[in-house]
Length: 194
Image (cartoon, rainbow, N blue to C red; front, side):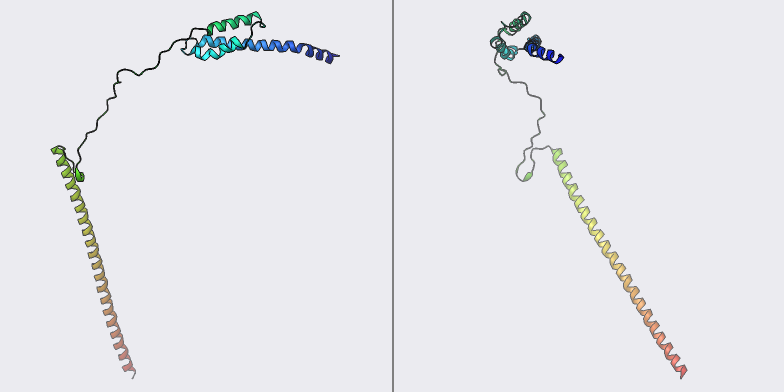
């Protein structure tokens, strides 16, 4: 019995519930639009932004079937949006040129053929000459040091080889004298046996 009553209530009250739900949604939307209008009415582009909303409210929403509070809200929004359009001036470049930022201009030195610099001061030329002389002397000194180190290494090697050759000669002499002594000793031994 209870289920029958609930079925009947749902069947007959459903259109009424849907109608109230739609009105509640419409009321919420209109309230949000009104708040947005109040919030953004100071913007220059306000009329351009809210023009589509005004078109929707005036042409596509009929107010005859709405309750009186919603009709009042609808008319308030249309009044807020229906502000005369603001005439804007076009953007134009300024007549005078802007003041450029102060930049450090580079020192321009005239360079002629073969990379020789002209037009520099006497001190700079002297400095360049001394720098070039220093580099040349430094390279020469390095070259001499390498030559000296090669010569010393060669002399040291010759000395070591001479010492080795002398030692080998002395060892050979000793071994030769030992061999002759041993030969003489064996010869004496043989004579004694006889």
